[in-house]
Length: 299
Image 1 (tube, helix red, strand yellow):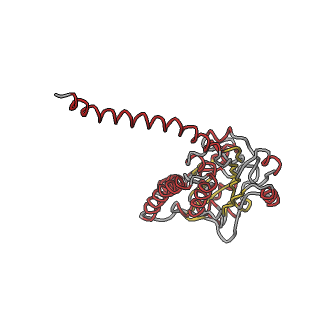
Image 2 (spheres, rainbow, N blue to C red; image 1 turned 90 degrees about the vertical axis):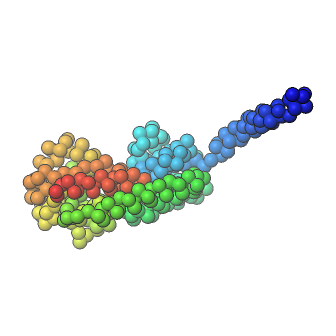
Image 3 (spheres, rainbow, N blue to C red; image 1 turned 60 degrees about the vertical axis):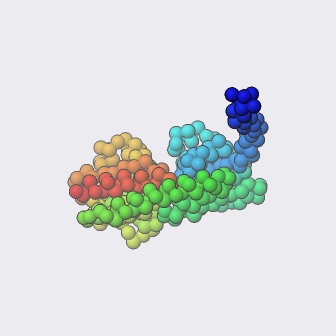
């Protein structure tokens, strides 16, 4: 083998080494630029546990400077600075966190506080909460815009849409009678029951049940007359309601419940309040879980 041939054989190896060195050099300069860009990403305050969940799913938790008190999932969200309850916000406390954007729903307030935040130059994203799958989609899109992660938001939305469609097909294929379900909100000493245009009403329908109470919007006090006329097969409530009562046995001791078919069978379904009523990215799995429990309760 000639020296010329030997040199030619080594040229590809040298080119590979040069490419690696060039890539390393580029990487060395790219890392500080990436870090610099990351530092410029918008700082966020989220006012809704479901919106906060989306932030974490998009990998934008490093941009969070504050959340409201309903932001309890994932567990890491509990340690974020809190701006108070979503309906009782304070402009002074929120602005002290120096956010670039606040993402909230139209259930947040007071309105005057949100106006003050806008006047201070902070972008405020308000999402319509109408207890639909569209609400979940709007939350994903709004977080994507506010966090400068729109591409990731589109990927997440496609994944969630597929999960939701699969769940809806499963519910549509179910046979048999739809159970009458009554949602009881009992985080305090005065339990209430849900009528139409509530998150609970929508979730019951999506999961293949029928709201046992209708003819009114929102919530009403849980009375003996209401329970007797509703005649629910199933009582649905939050795990927080059960904890507030001191356990399942204490919950069933309420005299109003004794007037229902559900009481005779002790047919009770519980789910975490944020999971059940939050209309966030876990909604497909939450609805699927309810559907399976509805089927088991009337089997």
